[in-house]
Length: 73
Image (tube, rainbow, N blue to C red; front, top):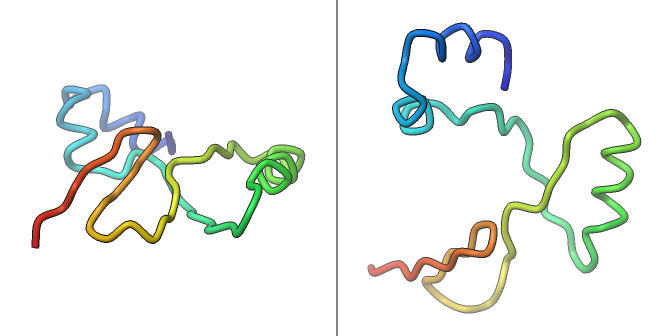
């Protein structure tokens, strides 16, 4: 979490912080195939990296960190 958000968090409930701010996810990389080598390279560079979702060809479905959500449109 960036320093400015840490300062704000001292005055705002955690639930509200997550509703209002992105809480520090500063970059998103979409990788074709195995993401592990990319995650390792980013970590070796001193960055905190993790997989947050998967792109599929399944229409109207969003999967983030193992939780699937079906969108209605």
